[in-house]
Image (cartoon, rainbow, N blue to C red):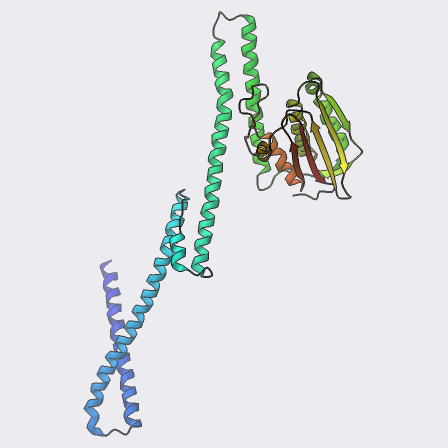
Amino acid sequence: MKIIKFLKKSGEVLAILLLLLLCWTASFFITSWLFHIFSINRLAFYAKYMIDSFLGFFLFGLIMYGISKIGFIQKKQSLFFRPMIGAMKNMAQGNFNIDLSFYKEEIGNRNHPFYEIAESITHMAKQLSEMEQMRQEFISNVSHEIQSPLTSISGFAHALKNDHLSPEERRQYLQIIEVESIRLSKLSENLLKLTSLESAHPPFQPKTYRLDQQLRRVILSMEPQWRNKDLEMDVSLNKMTISADEDLMDQVWINLIHNSIKFTPNHGTITIKILKNDTDSIEVIIKDTGIGMTKEVQMRIFERFYKADPSRNRSNGGSGLGLSIVKKIIEMHKGDIQVESSPKEGTEIKVKLPINNPGT
């Protein structure tokens, strides 16, 4: 290490001596040229060498000043980059509270490259902060959804250890454990489904099939649910062929019709029909005479884990992921879903889909 430092210092000294030599050589030729131009006689010989010396030192000083100014510029650029480097280090550590406003004010010019870099870093920090908040909310919601049924299962399993329970109480506790286990299984299934749909390569295999036949099959599969509430099913399904992923669309119709059944009181009506808007798209309308919802709820129903009524009882409660999955599948099909509803006046859902779907 000492040898390397010595060689480095020696190199710097040699560079300075070489620079001095070059400056004196340049000054010699400059003064010789001037003496020749102005025909200065030999009496000025010693004056010439004095001038050579002073001019050499002057040129050396001028060059060193120029080098120092270049170093100053580099230092200034380093000072400009330092806040941005610090901001990126903070983001790497998970701190997205970045403020470069003072830095942008110092630059002033919005077209300056440093200003644009600072703007990009600020925007990136904001987006990452929102993503981190969504991640934390997602983990919190999942933990809450899992903890609730686990608490019930644990509590009632402990209660079953009591030898003095009546057969009726034992059956009731076992039924609650079964319901909560199904709820956990459904939550796990929906989480896996949502993760799969939001992956870089979601499962999507469109094929041509009869949409009206699919809807009839789904409605018949849910007959025990709507018959149990004595609901009237007003179904008008014209023959319609579309290109879509049949398995994914099964999930859409099951979730939407299930919600209509769940939130429609006994003896209510559910209307399901297909309309052809034009040559390129169709519209499926699912309308019920249920409890309806406010405008505020309508704006949030497709959010993950959102529940319009957090106090819903166990039999009606869901994970709040069903409609998020529905919206994602419809978006994959380049379609659109709209909700029209008013409290106590029912809900109408319109799903618009292209007839021919080439894929995502």
